[in-house]
Structures are given as C-alpha cells and as structure tokens.
Length: 336
Image 1 (cartoon, rainbow, N blue to C red):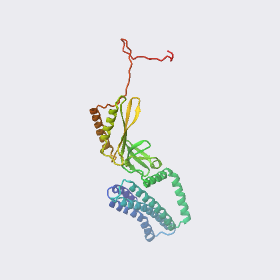
Image 2 (image 1 turned 90 degrees about the horizontal axis):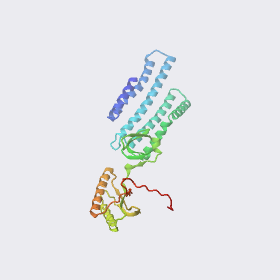
Image 3 (image 1 turned 120 degrees about the horizontal axis):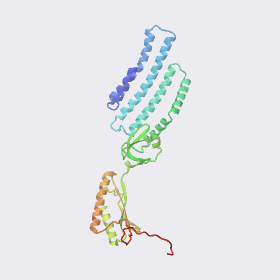
Image 4 (image 1 turned 120 degrees about the vertical axis):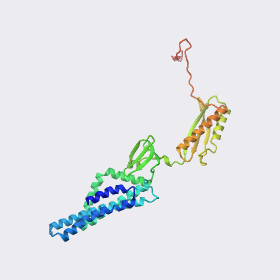
C-alpha cells in the first residue's frame, strides 16, 4: 500500500499537467492499495488457522484500513473527473471556471468521504449515532482549527461566482495597480506595473472595492491648454479651431463619445481651453502613440498660426547699485 501511494503521488504530479488520460489511469494505484487489506482479510480467514479474538482483530483492522483507502479513492476520483472536464477546449485551465470546477469537485469529494465513513462504519458494527457524533465533533474541530482557511474558501467561492476579475486583467485594489497572474484557493496574485508580485487573501478581495481597468471600453483623456493672458480674441478662436480640427473623426473615436473642446476659464495669467476625448479600444500603448501624434500636430499648427502657449511668469527685482543682488523689500506699515 505504501508503494502504491508513493507512485500514485509521483506519477500524479507528473501527468497532471501533461496528460489527462495518464493522470486518470494513475487512480488504479490507490484502488490497488484499497484491495490489499481486503485480500489480507480473505487470506487470514481462508488460509490461516486462527480463530477467536485474533481473527476478529485482523478482520476489523483490515476492513477499517480498506474503508480509509476507499475514502482516498473517492476523493481522487472526484479530482480526476474535474480535470477531465477542465481539459475541454472551451475551458481555460487557469481561468475562474476551472477554479470553480476544482472547488466543487473537492466539496463533492468531501461529501462522498463522509457518506463512505457513515456507511462503512455501520458495516464495521459501529452505531449510527456514534458515527454522527464523531463526524459532528470532528467537523467542529476541523472548523475551529481552520477558520482562516474556510474564510478564504468562502471568499474564493464568492470571487468565482461573481467574477469581478479574471486572470490577465488589469485591476486596481488596495493601492496596487497590476495584472492578475493567478487566482488560487486562498489568495489572488497580482503582478504590479513595477514588476513586484502581491498576494492578497481572497476573503479580503471579496470584500474590497476593485477597479477593473482591463474591462474598460475606452480610455478618457482630460487635459488643458493655456494661452497667454494678452492673447487676442482671434488667436483664441484660431486655437479652438485648430484643436477641434485635430480631433474631428480622430483615430479611435467612438461615435457615442465625441470629443469636447471649450474655452471654459479665465485665470489671472492665462485663458484656459479644456479638451476631453475618448479612445477605443482601450489599448493603453496605442492610446499613448495617438496622444503623441495629436500633441505634435497641435504644436505644429500653433507655431504656424502664431499661437503661443502660456508659461508661468516670474518677475525678479534686482538692486540698481554696482553689487549684483536681489532687491530686499520690507513692508513696515500702512502709514509709511
């Protein structure tokens, strides 16, 4: 039995990601292990001349070991059924649906394990009430010892059912901006834009406000152009015309979101032109390339039309004597 379980562990890990068929065939090993105590009981009963308590102890032990082995077989069988379903071309092995199938198979396997324990316990001669009490006490002990694990499992189930994000999508959560690399049974791994990996527990993720950047339909840009305060009305109108022409039927424009350009503010040092436009699809690097071309086009046309951009003004006052130094000004009172 030990050799069978050893090879089942080694071969199962080898074939799980490479060949589903071979992975399913490996279940023969735990089935063989479960048949060993049954064969030993038959051998002791039919071929050995032992009776009384020795044969009773031998028979009970063999049946108990066989029962535990069948529990392992049931759990392994459910796991392999899940992998066969996930092997379908329509299911992403690393996606949320695959994770959901694996979790459901484990829950079904746990239910089968409890059922086999209750039925097998009655076969061994244990009262049903004793079995139910044992199962209840054992379940309570496991629940108390694994509160964090169970909490994470329920958080994972919530994510799998609600699907707020998928593997490969860019999300923003708890100040971390990056791409989802893996959704595990306990945590979600995010590769941030700086290259570091962050693991966040799924129970925390299920209760957090998640901004899914990867699912946006477009990218919105809102910027401002400032013209000098001494610009004439004609130059302001010319600047508005240049920007509107540059954004007319622009690359990536969604007819439902036309660009918006307006002369909206008077500042003490400049006139402000507000520009809002949208780019679709939401490919960030294509959007950046378009933004660069748009900015250069506006700069060229502004230069040709003699329209200047407003720059911050600084006035410096210097002393008028032979020594080069800033002029010191001091206010001593209103009546001076």
